[in-house]
Length: 77
Image (cartoon, rainbow, N blue to C red; front, side, top):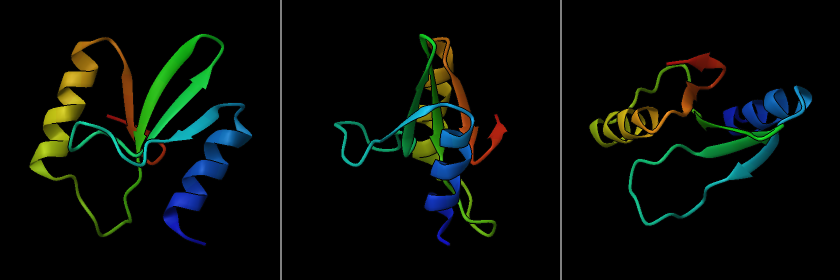
């Protein structure tokens, strides 16, 4: 099973509505936006051997500055 499928199933099993952010106007935005009970979190899907790019690190910092939680796979960063 692909990492993206594992991530989607993990969060859906916890009751989150999983929205795949396929194309946005901002490079480096996390792969998924999760919605549940009036809350929004963002999740970047990465294989075990993969790492965040500089633009992804920058976007994650921006998102967190706006008060949102960001995860890589199942781990909050």
